[in-house]
Length: 141
Image (tube, rainbow, N blue to C red):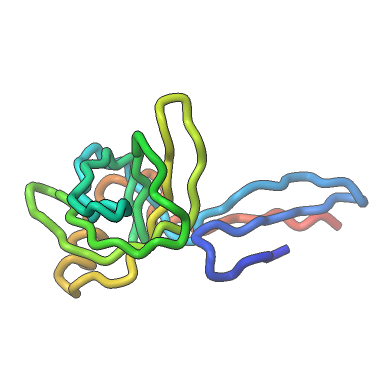
């Protein structure tokens, strides 16, 4: 069942003879690991910038690791380093979870310049093990 079509993730449920065969989260866009630094506007009233570590990137957004809460739904200016090039973008914090060392957040790209979109696409193409693969679903008769 698709519960939230806007989300980067959506639930997929397969049934076999009335029992769940698989339930999990499937990405709409492939991701590639990215070890880089992302600088964002601080969500705190005092302003400033925060340095975050990136974990992965896809055409639709990225995942970052933070030491403190950012706030779901916030829209932030972000600078991302990709292949020695700074990409300035606007991101929305769409989901988050607590980790042992802090927080993990999914950020949706709200706007990327066309050249930056192409840079992200090429990076994912060259670094994602699943880019271009289609999901195969077996039919049970």
